Image 1 (cartoon, rainbow, N blue to C red):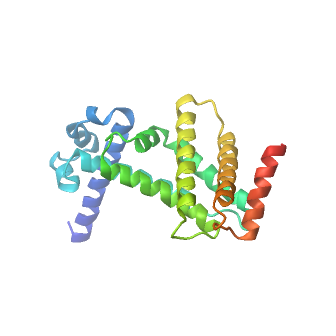
Image 2: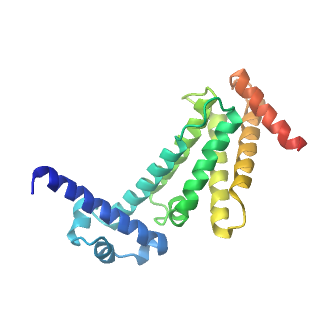
Image 3: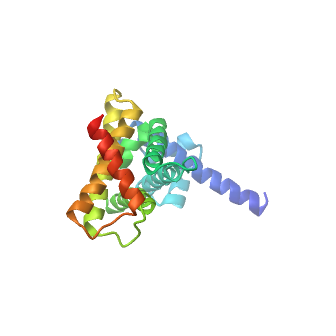
Length: 221
């Protein structure tokens, strides 16, 4: 076997372990999944888990990181050219909801955290949520450093969106478009409320007009 083939085989075995662990963690609580059965499902030697991930916790965090990266990639899906701000928001939300519908079995473990208060897991989730918020703020012309009131409001909105998605997965009685409209309207209201509370925060005039129109349409429909 050449060096290149050996490297590919190593990557394949590592990914096989991740895929096996992801499938098992999606069906049973973290404490009920053993590294022995992960290795068996992946078709690899048991010692490779320690070699690549140190232990089960390291493997679990890698699985969660992979899911987070996939969600982030979905959030970057480009909207149709010439879309309004509201349509760009709806586009991003539709893609994210579609992704989560496809991976519903792993979304709740990702958000709720089978490792409980594990600081590394919590930091990964917080980072994922804030990256999504930052993309929205950049579309509004807001870059770092984000004013405290706006940062607080955006973190609250992202948590609201996550909880709605968890409710949709749990009860399976809310259609995706309802979530899109709820989340878009809540975001527009949140962003406008922040500017009313903190006048030093200003969005570009076009973005502000679109947000105001979106809120007005929701209240008159």
